Length: 416
Image (cartoon, rainbow, N blue to C red; front, side, top):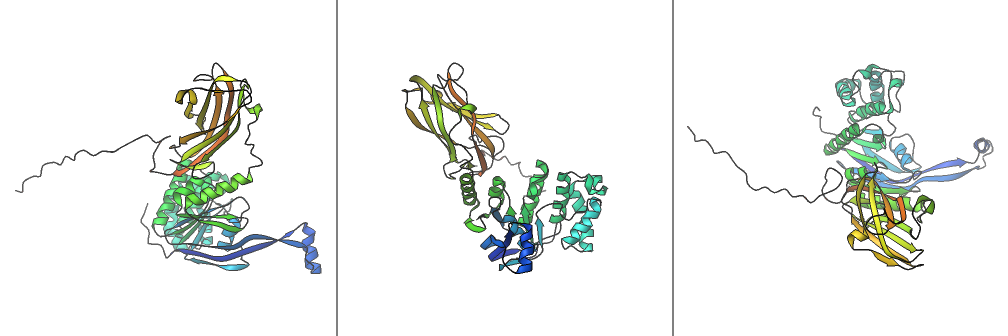
């Protein structure tokens, strides 16, 4: 990658931003209001009193449920919409990676679209000529750059759009789920380029539902809900709050009590309730290295002298990551008919970021093959995002130490 000149001063400041929309029950009501002057609409407050700033070399994450106002905010910042009140001050050229491919002409070749799109981003013909080779090289489209855009896959359009935007030499970058398209390799390449942009002093507003990316990439984050700013602080605290909001939203849809139709076994003992949360996050999303607490309620429908509770964690590919039961850990326990028992399983979840499922079981002895009272696959889902401690590769962290014992230096030659 060729060296680039230092970026201009990059800074974003938003003060008391407010945006409302008129909402009409029927299309004809808009005409009635225009002709009669009588109000036929209700007012929808998309954003209300939003304030934040992004400094040079800083990445600010933006979290919020669908409909929270994130897209409206980005449209205001790119000039697509005008605010009702408040101010937006952006120093330097701003480039939005909002909907990659917007403004492209499908009948033109990729090469011709570089010129057209770059001009829309504010680049001069001289700048385009200087950056053209770098754009083509970064996009890795090869000879496809001369083919019509309509022949491109969504991932190829994403490559071209990102390559143009990042080489437009913006001072401020707005990213909205733009990296969700494309293969893992190119996503990593884009992330590396964004980090380089940050190191050069660029200011980045990063909107994403990828909570791991928010934790790793962003210095701070804000949470917007129903058009209002709920929280501004560390990325981890913002992610935790966002997950509480999502959990509350889905509480009625997600049945915490287990449905017997989804489980199998004799039914002599059952798991009536299961919930898995991070000890610090208080939600189903936790950091690698955080404590995972699994709260369970057991019910005995018959008296049993030999009961073992087992838990099993699987990754998104269905591979067993970790499993253990009380028989292996501390021995079996007994329950009388009609008894209930609350149990908690505490696991130090030092596992790699990703999505996981939790299965639970009640059986006799140290396995479920002889007498299985209750088995429920994927009863809960949880996600690991970001690292509490140092990064690692693979599935889990193992105890590891690097010890330097001695440095052997070659003998110095005597001066002749």
